[in-house]
Every structure is written in structure tokens, then in C-alpha cells.
Length: 401
Ligand code: OVM
Image (spheres, rainbow, N blue to C red):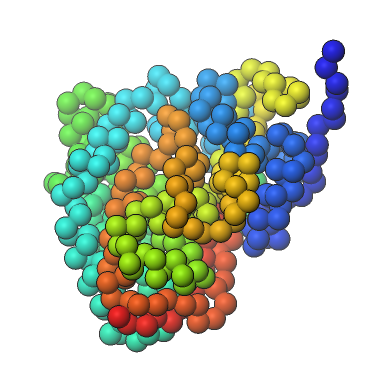
């Protein structure tokens, strides 16, 4: 005999400004409520414990992506843009585009970028210190600038219009959530921003060498079709900018608010990579994604019916004390953050993660060389987004080494 335990519910709004400002207590309450919680406001099921989030991310057959990884269910609603061939697809359709990008963005292929990105990061740090002195905004002077200097060049898009990349991404990540005020504020510009983004994906617009050209070359070899190529380029422009900007902001905030960890990094510069992954665990720049059940699925004694949206709280899983211990809320370079779900898990796990790590490693290494201490010089201000945990501004004061 099984005991019928009633499904825990919450009427909180995960996409409301109170939670977006500080999701940590809400995440703790969700984890405590049970392995699955019904969010009554949106009639979706939520997983916030590491065990269930991790399992759902790996179970692509039970928890599909092709019905959309936002609140909108593509089985019943038309997507606002043609679906991504990677993010919003499942095997078998997902596999060819994934294989192509995985090779282009893999560690071996990125080796040729390292030297240039290291030099670019050193030049940027030098420039910020000379132009602004020891006090500056770490978001607008570093975290936004560095990815926008190196990544669009690596893709091979022209210089004109690059200021569209961040607002396009901001709206895209808002659009995974409900149609709230955050989506509303981006609505007036999205036609223009989408048209610009889509135009950058054409073969003749892209530089002869770069990730974009590599994608078109894969189409020439028949690994993907020529119809698929522009959408795969679009994935780079969609997923590759805001995520890394907010990832860099996260690691800069982690260090600015944990000065002892900066001392540790400077003593051990090889720790820059693990520091970035620990910051991705700690801050989870991508907070949430949805999946859609493909059949009735039992979790913790409750049945989630076929076709239902399930909200996966990556940020909550990444601080689950059951997985990370009682100091899960601390940013700690001594921790092994591997297994975090900040880049997802399973066959959709971030295909650009090596690019993100290389950007972070380049910038942190350059900063660690030049800066003995980094401290907050005033209150950092959050940027609210339905999917991303982000900063609008972060005043810092540095002590040059
Ligand atoms: C895409 C895409 C867009 C946003 C995020 C993402 C985190 C992928 O268009 O493929 O992955």
C-alpha cells in the first residue's frame, strides 16, 4: 500500500521581481517542500532538488525539449521564433547540429584562440586601469566588454550592429518565462533585433574564417543541410553573449564579495578555470529551463501527466545541501564544482561551455596578474530577467599589484 501524500504547492511567482531580486530563500523553500512542487500560478510542476533536476536533465525521452524549454508549450502554441535546432529539439533531429557545433566549439578547435584572447584580456585590463583608475563598474567595463570584443569576431559577424546582441539575448531569455512585464518591455524592439540577428547568419555576411564559416563548411560537407546552417549560426548569437557576460559578472562578484578567495586565486593562477565553474555553480547565470513530459511520469509518489511543463531550478539544484554540503551557499575555490548543472547536464549540456571557460580564464588570469585586491565600492544592482541571474552594475575598487 502506498500512502497518498498530497502534492506540495506554491503560489509564489518565480518570475516576479521579489524572487528575481533574491531567489535564494524561495529556492530553499521549494527544496524543503518536496521533490516536486506544483506551482499553481502557472500550473507547472517544479523540481528544485539536485537529484530530480539532474535526473530530468538526463532523461530526454521522458522530459522533452522539442515542445520548448520555456513556459510556452509548442504542442499547443506557436513559438515566437523558429525553434532552435539544438535547444528546442530532441534526438534524432538534434544530433547532427549538435555534432557539428561540438566539434567547432570543442577544446581542440579553441586552442588557436587562446593566445589572442589572453592578449585581448591583458589589453582590456590595462585600458580600464588607465582610463578609469582603481574604481570602475565591473559589469559595464569588464563583463560586458570582453565577450563583445572576442566572441563576435570569433563567430565572424561584421562590426556594425553588435550593440544588438545583448538586447536580443535579454529578450530571448525573458521569452522563456511567462508573458510578464519583462517580456513586454522587449516586445517593441524584437522584430528589428531578430531581423538583424537572422541577417548575420547568411554565408556571405560571415567572415571567411570563424565559427560561422565553419558551420557553413559543415553544410558543404553534408553534415547538416544548407537550410539548417543559418539556424545553427543563430544559436551561437543567441546563447553565446548574455550567458558569458553574466557568467563573468558572477565570477567577478564572487571574488569582490570573497576577498580571501581572490588571494587564493592569485597564489594559484591555475585555479581560474575551476573558479569560473564554482561561480557558475554558485550564481547559476542560467537559473531555469522547462521541459515537457512525454508520458505520465511518477516523481516522489506523484504523477506528472503527459504533456505537462516541468520547471527545472538549476540554481536551486546547484545549492542543494544534500549534494553540496552545509556550505553550499559559499563560493569556495577549494570545492570540486564538477557535476553542477549550471551548464545543464546530459545531451543538451552547454555546447559552448569551453568557449565560456576560455573567456573567463583569459580575463581572470589577466586581472589576477595586475590586481592585488578587488572589493565592492558600493551596492551592486541586479538586472532582472526571467531566465538569467544577472547584474546591471557592480562598482568595484581594485588595488593594482
Ligand atoms: C539557441 C539557444 C538560445 C538560448 C539559449 C540556448 C542556453 C540556446 O538558440 O540555440 O542555450
